[in-house]
Image 1 (tube, helix red, strand yellow):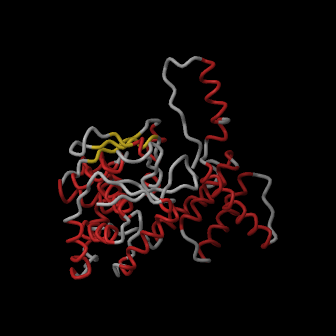
Image 2: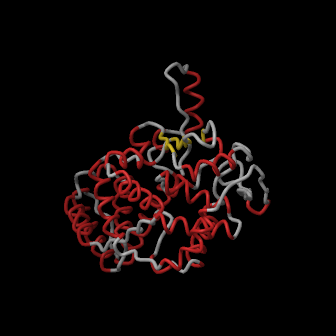
Image 3: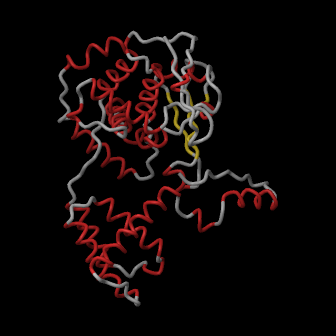
Length: 343
């Protein structure tokens, strides 16, 4: 994750801007986030290792790079690498050598061909029935905050990265019966538009527990466990429910939430706004592919119904039990963890 950008008001003084920009770093350092920069570095290293192994040198003229890069893409394709590996390499190469822009026509043509013939590996959309069963399982095993995080991600159409960084202070609520607004800050699409994003939750089953949680924790408490612990719990939940064969992933929550909302309201425009897509065309492809995948998700009711009953009767009271093992507070990367609360 890159450095958090502090919004500057139009009335900020020159000295204030200077101080804030000093903390942010140089413009060049801000062009690519730290995590992306790490992927770029690895992609370039793999390319240079390939050149060394094949006894090849980088050409001196940029016009000669196209043939070499095309050969490397063919190598990646033959080795069974994923399209993301090739895409990261191409982006890394142009970040490393900006003057190569518009000088790799053959390579980009191969990338378009790769995209056309790549076997898709998309996260299947999670159905509301599976969501309720997972929450029921979480309640049964006293992972209450985990269950709440599933609801927030599904009905809020959150990306996994957005969910894993939500803290209590970002949630604005007036009561357990009124909509909750999640301030997401500069998200993936928000950075492209230069504006912070937010999500509004109206599902009553989410609002009551969210209000109870927020009212009992410090402002900088995360909604989830540490990312790796939350993902492990997600996988463990699916395994215990015997749902492994459907290959749900954390991103299935966003895909499932979007598909569920479209089926419920029948309005693509509403889904675009809720999911914060910039292009309607992208959202349409997203929804259509999700609907198509739903037909393949036929889960026997006996697997889910016992936990549906638990979900249906799940209510909150004001009491909250703190668990040192599951507390996660403070800034990003903190060793402390999130809390549980009892019903």
